[in-house]
Image (cartoon, rainbow, N blue to C red):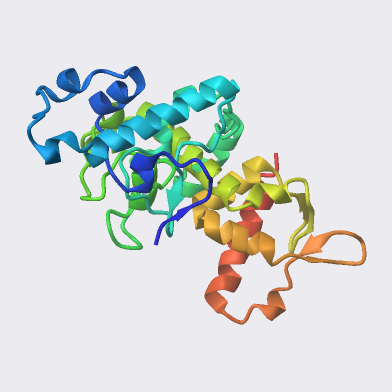
Length: 276
């Protein structure tokens, strides 16, 4: 099941539809029907006179953009983030809109990228880890299929989309520069998932951890969601308890499920290690 966590989801995303780049451009530019679709409407046909779903979606998307222009604001999350166990089903992904989003806090610093790459692959851009099934975890940042779908590089038919010139596993593995761009797009999708599920409400919360004390930061949340997913990060945060000193902690003794217990420990480690 997919969840939509904002009130202004573009209809083409909400319906799970797909707009090509050309159609997206027409929706923005208001190109007439004849030019957009290469034919004239049959005025004698009742079905032709009735707007198609595609036309309705494009018209609604145009209205949304006009409304935002009037308000002179662009919300970070008005692009239709949808998620279900970290898997997106539409090829119109968050990453397609990075250039129009003024917020770039999801882009990790060089130090944080190096730390993440070292922990994920030992700084090996060519690493492929088959553990976990599917296509495995790929590259310097060990991104899996779900993450590549989120970022728009693989579609729901398990085909490479050609985004950024990546048309195959070989293209991905053998180009560190492209992997860095994929990481940015992947982190952008995680940023929106964390924002939409309420995880950012816990920023600057002081945590009494198992190894050391730390504070919840945006970078820590991103790094933790990279490993365990945004939903698991939120589950960790919503399970925090407050001690007598005003700090928050996880009572691991209460978590009987060993899988969740272990997952929370991994999340806490990422939050602490990527506190900057």
